[in-house]
Image (cartoon, rainbow, N blue to C red; front, side):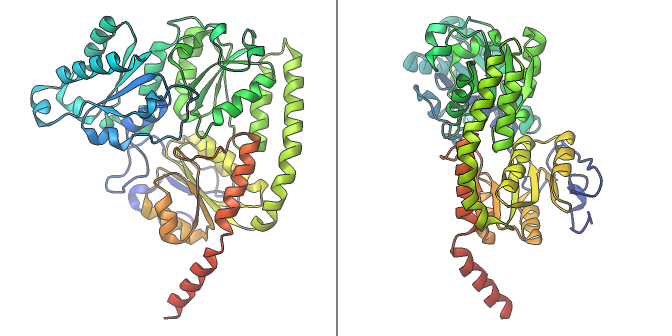
Length: 465
């Protein structure tokens, strides 16, 4: 037993309760065999990071099932090219396993580049490629020399580790692009009034789900800041190549992009800050922390303060109507990154909802210690959970709404619990000040739906039998 709830022997050390001392959760370990972990593989981790780069070919070197599994899995929208939404695969078969798939890879790359004229190509290695030993990097170098564009291997064999190892493989591919070209102010795609601003940043770990990157970009531009590149939401290869000229990297998804931020700091001397764009408090803090990075221009801080004041003045009144109905409701959170989970706990508290369960796929020890201090005593904190475990905890804690991703949705529906999608596929922006209103509206609709009265009635009938 851990606290008041049972935990499988193999899962001890990865589940704790807030208020029982500082948790020392075991992180970054392989998922327990047979537990059907909610965590994705290395290949999927790299794919979701790089996928939103809209003017590149993304070729999965492996069986067609790997490409199908990750096809269009992010709601990452583009303001221009849609090439990223096509899913390409070398479709390796039994004969390729025996004789090797390098010829098939070369032919596929050559044909795709000829037809689509991309600015770059990413080639993802899958499990079978690691087993048969194809030299993917050599093929990429050959095609790059012939076609005159970057062709980048992504060493993402699924069995090599966890989803976080996929993030690192993606960051390695991005790092090889950065610094290979200079940014062009004439090609700036944002507000033209800041196209030549010396106060330039990169946004890392923002994937433009439902257009969120555009919301965040407008905030920074209202402060007088130029966004050189977004990695990788609505991303463009040439903007990433010139990202070394930024003066600050702003890391939104700490799990996926902190490695790249550290590498850019070491190679290019670019400092970075970690932020979150979810919830009023963290959104405001993100703007203030970026403004503080440019002390030589006090107008930036003044604009940030004015922006926050204006936006909060519009947001808080809109939230009050939702809070009246949500006061006392209980929420469970299971998402990819623990940094996002922290923001969600605070955002839920703002609308009267307490968090009774919170977990992530890729959190580290410090993340879980912070969560323990933030959550109410007794809140279950879990790393790399599985359906059986989550189901048990949801029922134990009496959650009214479950906030997660595509793999968590069936759990909520089977248990008769409201569900809010806060992951890859959503179509409604939840970041920024306007995103907070959308989030509150979705939680309200999920938790207060009249259908739950029928569900409770059926439970009473079952209990009475």
